[in-house]
Image 1 (cartoon, rainbow, N blue to C red):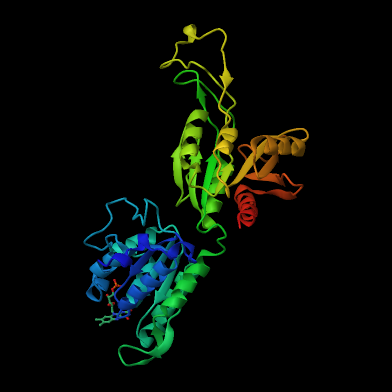
Image 2: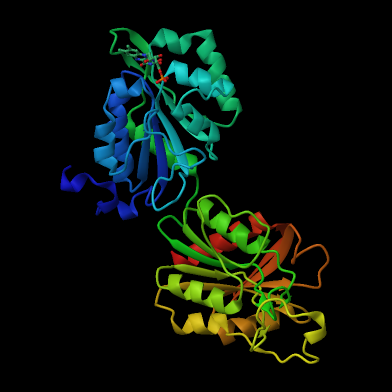
Length: 412
Ligand SMILES: Cc1cc2nc3c(=O)[nH]c(=O)nc-3n(C[C@H](O)[C@H](O)[C@H](O)COP(=O)(O)O)c2cc1C
């Protein structure tokens, strides 16, 4: 393999339009399969990290070795499928954010439209969490055939995006519509498909949920935070293009796709996990409800009821933000949440100054229907320089996006 071909070592790609975006490129058995090599290279030049899957028919046009050499990772085929139940990770144990079917044959279009999963590629495509980007290539009469037209309409109706084939001379000698779109157009379509990504190339570190401070194996001090707000921040961060690490306390909320999750229990553990990821991050969002108190000497196992201490001694947990602020490097942006009552904004601003945050998301915990354990939230975003932005009641996802768009503007 030539030294410069390996995608993960590409020097110029970290600021491309697809910097760090994980793509799965599914190649099917069209004469245009060789053009998928050019598409792969164009994606890599934009900074994408690509894994390739090929149908059996595709391997008759281009060898898996070509793609494996260019990506540095094995190609997924019927004879080398991912292990049963395994998600084919693209890089660093992470799933693909964009799945591109290029070229897509009439046969594969038909299968996808009807949910047929009789080969590894179709099974992967059926299981893909993201909407597909499909670039068909076929003889013009196949493309114009009513069956293909129907299949395309079904796929578009399902929310998948098509990069329509172009008009021109075909390999078979016919002239018409059916030629695979140019690689540059396919790459532009991938960029468009991903949408607005102001956090592309940025690393976001999020803390979420409640911490627990155990008295013994079954008794603990905690609070009602479910982690929903922090998980929504992580999910929104991913959608806006960030590499996300989510350090979270015990919760029932599912980890968003493509997010690296680090489960912890106590404030001490949360601090250790955050510290070990702090140096790498551009943006820290502290959405966790970290407990203030802990038991200095937790009891081993489950203490029998009759042997429980009559009085409990507690001590303060470490101050996470103050510790992290002391280790902060220039250029990092710190955003915190302040769940307050009374003069909410004054308390939140005092917290911002005390803890060295750049932005604080002030929540009124006494307002009905928002905050802890609710799907909705409302907040006021404050900086230390008199900036004040009202974020009216909405679902936590939308609110998370608004907060991050604001943070992205400050980072830029
Ligand atoms: C030389 C040759 C070129 C082909 N080119 C195309 C093509 O461009 N588009 C297409 O839809 N089918 C094309 N086919 C037919 C497919 O290879 C065939 O339908 C195959 O079953 C597709 O399998 P797959 O969708 O699993 O990759 C071609 C077949 C041959 C022999």
